[in-house]
Length: 139
Image (cartoon, rainbow, N blue to C red; front, side):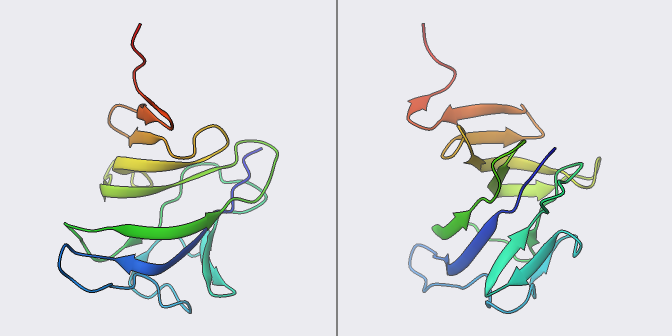
């Protein structure tokens, strides 16, 4: 059974090279975000996604704004120990049209054995880098 509850605290925001911090999340609502309201919600001032009953497929929450030069800072928490407990943060990505629930682009992976790895979502469908080592491994 898939169990996922990623909790994102996006209070630090996005920084341009010379710009001031731009908060992505107001701590109260999903204003400025797009995603399935049956999956994504705000609880106790943080964004919560997924369910302990599992998600049959990927579910993404995206900001309505685009950013080019940025430094993203966030905190996360995964809840659950059984099944595929996994999350991630997409960046330099776009929503796929087919299937519409997917993203195309880079994902900073979060999950047992994968946290800190770089995954290429919907294109190569492969890890480009694993936490602590380059990928693919050299002989």
